[in-house]
Image (cartoon, rainbow, N blue to C red; front, side, top):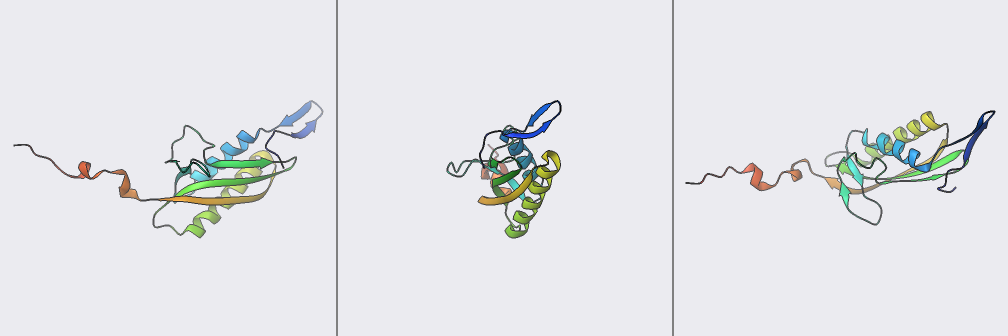
Length: 135
């Protein structure tokens, strides 16, 4: 498989091509829909995470697209307290279902990479919780 857009389907009126970036966006949206996913990780080597920022919907997603098949890798940040195997399995099901329904491609694999754990109270610095009074 390759990451370039192949002629997916030829019709009487011409050919239909689906860019790999489209599949990345579909996979990214399907991933963040799963409860327990805190966000997408910036990539395999980067290690910089962005929590549920919707500016780059394909962040943390890598796809390989063939003529009729696709393979997907997603890198996520999971919310603390969730069972990782259950969340990962739900991501696999949701990504596969979404891509196959929207594109007609067969998804041969969905690999889930957990890069970090997000703690809900980690967003608030200690200064915000304290009340300061100046006399």
